[in-house]
Image (cartoon, rainbow, N blue to C red; front, top):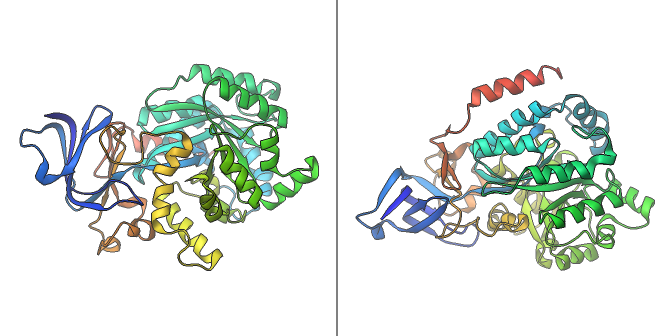
Length: 433
């Protein structure tokens, strides 16, 4: 038997959050897919591989899914900290984007973000920004799986100086970025306070015609909900339902300020929700009613949001924040257990984005695989996978395979010149200093 990559001597976590660990196992990768998995004792003697990875001392698991990111905003990391959301957006981020966002900026800063995500265990990202064709190019080159969504906003925007052409530009983007095995195009309406109801409806129509996802920030802050109600006489989620926006191909990001009826709407319509706990904490947006959403059957994933409001893209750290945030706000230590966080950062996040073939290690699934080095003081002893949520960090990720391609080996990125990329971003940042 032959395969492209064979991982041996590994502890296998096949179904994070819901499965046991195989103490001594192997994973065989052929092409883009996992072809075989099992215990080392059952590895055929005649098994041959182009590449063998000895994962002794490591945990092998599916790669993580970052459900919401603005990759190019690595340029704005640390630019405007400790500010309320609207002050941060209107006084700093929007002006900086208007002045400094370009194709070159999006390409290099997205490349840097992809490197950071791969180094910390993310193998799939849902991204939304302007000049998204450049982000898609960066993602393909470095080899990270991505849902790349073109930003839509009812103001002059990078690449779309006349907002009257925002939908046409989005349609041109979709036509120019055909879906493949690695990058899937999508659309991203920024929010209900930056896009008119009509814009969102037309964007949704375009998304449906192109069979792609529509992402939107919604109900992130209490002020947003109050202002929306004052303007339209209805809350944001109810408004989106009235506009026929909510369905299985819509992904609502944040969803912090919801009532029970709105949670029921999300569950009934089948749309995905992405929670971004660290961004919500940093901007003092609030705490999403995640336990209630999960109890109602809402499909939920985890996102980092962009570097300007986080300030990193480490999804392992995001899981730790998620678990602890919900425990302390509910005063219930059993709230948001580690296993739930692992599912949201993997299989459930993939489901929210529309991926059925990632999130577990079994034959026929996409070969999106990471190895975590357990030979670390903070991961010793290793009793169970809960420690990944409460003690691990992105720096513990040793190797990564995405779609059958080895992109990180022994902490060395194989598909990017990281020094060149960081130098390019530093050069861009000097314009802002």
